[in-house]
Length: 244
Image: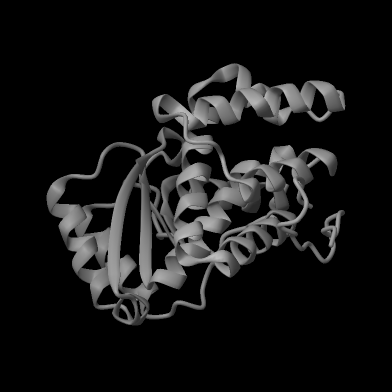
């Protein structure tokens, strides 16, 4: 049976070689660790607040590839996750491939050639062939002009796998690396949250992004708590523009 193409009603077939409110702190000074932890504790008490803006299109592809892999076996799900992680890393590390993914004007032949390079790089030294499920995913993304959604699709897929395994992955973004004591305090607060207590395991990572200016942004699942200085600056700019 051929798979459905197009963004609506995505489904994958194994017979075919192709697939188809944020929180802001009050003043404008850089928040202290105590202030951050206090604000974060309040935020985690109400987890219905602030959801990350995720592409609806990317989510559809994430769910489709997740369902296709899991329907085969848990082992296949793990293999596809490893492949997508490798592909994500390759795209981030090789500027030409990042530009390739972001270019919607390439011909079908050029897209096919570019994907072959990505698969080869992702296979690494072991040269274990990329699975049909992963190739089918990118075949459909390419055909539908959605290769630019690649990173969002992979992130969404990883979130679904983490939920399936009972894992809670938390990404704390800060302008500079978090001090160990602050990281430990945030971890303690997170473990007390209802979401973390429902998970089998908790994984916390620190992502450095100077554009946040100060404070932190905490992402977990499909939720986000924004305690960054940049969000307060943006809010102030919006207020000033409205008052002019």
